[in-house]
Length: 173
Image (cartoon, rainbow, N blue to C red; front, side, top):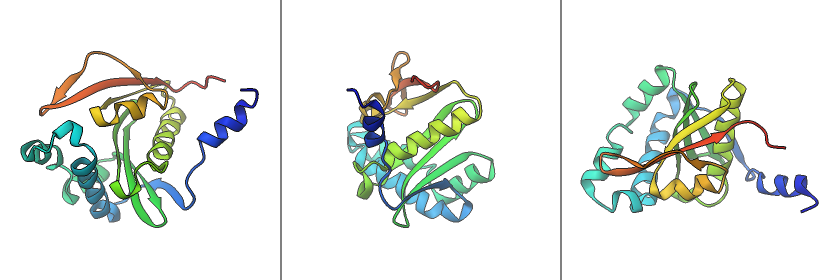
């Protein structure tokens, strides 16, 4: 444990070929595909394969709706892995992480962690001292492993459990 900096750097390595950038209206089709594939394939513990739950969750994840988010000033970020959109994240200036979805072909390789860290840095840079989000059952342990803490009783959105979480954006070292 004497080499905290080395350990920290080892865990914060970004995958080779990964680019983090703001989304544009030219990305809406790729964003839609990542969101829908992630929800459908990776979030089974939440929707339990129920077609109605999947439809409710994905109905506003189409290119036209996403273009409206971007045109409306939403802060949507992408992780591109070797030129492909691998993850999508979103945030509000108020300190809320609104989206973090990873394409199934890019899960468990550090893409989600890299994008989450980028969103946290963006919020801290705007003066937010605390961040919040609602995690799904699928993502809850992912966030806990990255320093997020439960922040209240679970809720529900269209039958999908939601777990409020928070994180201080103040450096701890």
